[in-house]
Image (cartoon, rainbow, N blue to C red; front, side, top):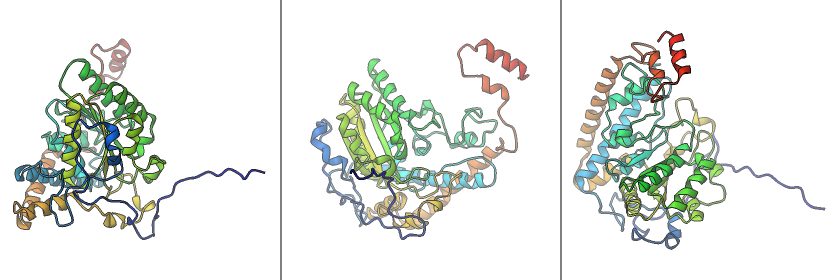
Length: 408
């Protein structure tokens, strides 16, 4: 008689109340992962889907073949971008707790991923982001006032109250509208990249997805089309270890790593230390060059950690140890870049403290200005008429009637 079938549900190594332990996470030494030529065949770099590309070592030195691409001025600019995003996060998180907005999502611990990637792009390239890539906007020079007004849904909200807070849209800054339906942006990125190639343009696309959303069918459909048509796209997977309440093993399945998913489609795939600004930029630049040279798509997995809650609606203490982030072995991206610059003699503790104060002061000044135009519960808001505008080039009769019935 056959034994009964069993059903497996993957479990994280540690639950709330347990002692965090990442000792079984294989982490490559800084500088040890090779840097292949940009035109390498995907089958020749299968090993890079399982290693982790790192540049900064434990002594804050930049080592290995992926180092040396950025000068001091560029690194200092990157540090300020990450510090600005962190200060922005802190003020908006506080604003949500004060009832000035309904919802917010922090980037704590993940700042290097989007800030460094943005610096590898050129004007006109298009990102199809999720809700945790505001660093693309900050590093790209998008006005922080517009971001705050959209979060507050006030009279200057560039989206006129039609998007949830943090679901930004700034196509002129290479930032396509964020979709609350996760994974849709992946197939959109591939389609946009295909269209760019069909038009004989020079612009590439970048798709963004979290580890949990890779379980969606859109993720796999995007890989099929990107592989088949060699779309000029970079397919980014931000593995911050946790979806809203499930650990990465639920979505990863038996593939070993998320990057390895690309191998089955013949797409070159790399993993990078997502808390190492230099490594993220170097890998991004490699993949962007590959796309721009008509060599096809690249999958990049950023190994990082979501320090804060998934959102202001989430309590992570219900599903992971409170001290788990302290045990994360790849550290804090801001502190790591700061220490590297100090090691190079381009920065100091005093200058860092001064910069922190200056950045926080500038963020608070913009916040005060934004709040003069209203918040969620006070001040002017977009007109109800705005919901009918900018949707159709020619407004259909049924919407015209609805607008008239609403008296707007």
